[in-house]
Length: 485
Image 1 (spheres, helix red, strand yellow):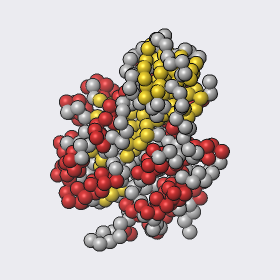
Image 2 (cartoon, one colour):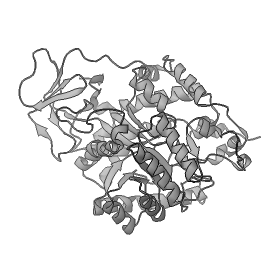
Image 3 (spheres, one colour):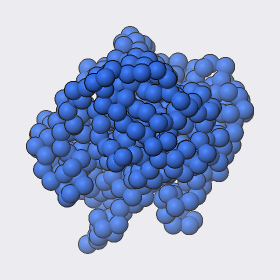
Image 4 (spheres, helix red, strand yellow):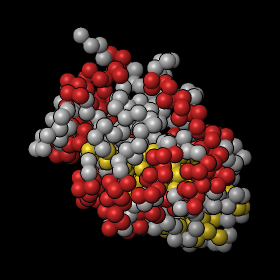
């Protein structure tokens, strides 16, 4: 018999886009989960009851703190406003309700609650532009076999931990997070703001096709695969199917659409060098999204996949680590966003066996990371930061460390700007589909009050961001989730 103990006791780590781990192929080929969006919602109903998952998790599943009854004044701070390369001193930041009321050196209302920052740096809340909150902390084998209520609870736990690492906003680019977002926004649980994409749209044998050979051929009228019924992926072939699947995500509240336009690192059925979808199919998704005044972002690594996606009208490339000079120049010329992740051969790389096809693809991607960041900087491509953490609780707890790795290519002020003001600019591409009204990523009058107070100066030492203990205050939407001062 197949022994899955390795998969259940030693969760696989992460590098880029993980889909089909070898150790779960047997399970995936034989297990047909019967859970649907309805049962996933049932799981979320269990989630919001606050069922405990240990001390830390149960705290994360509690309701958010109440809105302050009085204005809050931050004093004795240095200010990183999200855009300036230097800190401002001698200013006070006043928060009223969920907005920043003023940034000045003057007085404040007598009734204001004062927080003495002890000389720390006040900065905007961090934004992760490439997340999969539904799958960030659970092994893929668990995602394929666990009870939906358990999966929902783990999603809630992941969302709470995400916020407590200082990331107040998530741009989620694939997975069933609509219900999770609603529970957070309703105040049932703690978590970040979420810009959801919904299901990842994939062609047959594309990067979002989680089926096995035993599921083929697919006939008209066949029951959808569990990965589709759960809202993780949507398999669509041809213009008409792409239109329908795109519109289904918009129906549920997608703020942007995610399409798989190229191969992945560990996928069994879509080689890294493959291009996926025709230009007409990609354009169908683009036009459907444009009809709702939002945009399409695509998973793509290679120059060919990047060029095809741009020709179809997409607005953002996720990954793109194998981009060349011409494709980077094209991104700059067309004002395409480049959502990059710091994939390196370090402690955060998945331990694929040497000589395996997965290790070969992994090293191809890693070998392109330096070049990708350098090309983006050279050509002035609008660049976003994201983690793309999948299937590893250990890696999910290292978001700040992932951000700090950008010091390899950027100055600390550039790193923080990318994870605040720049990422917020990418979020704004969703236009009226943006789920929250107000400006993020900056500290200025009338911006949303998502703030961090760091004990120390991250512009001098970016590694401070890697340790959540250095975050003395975490505020989201004007509410204080953490204050250790």
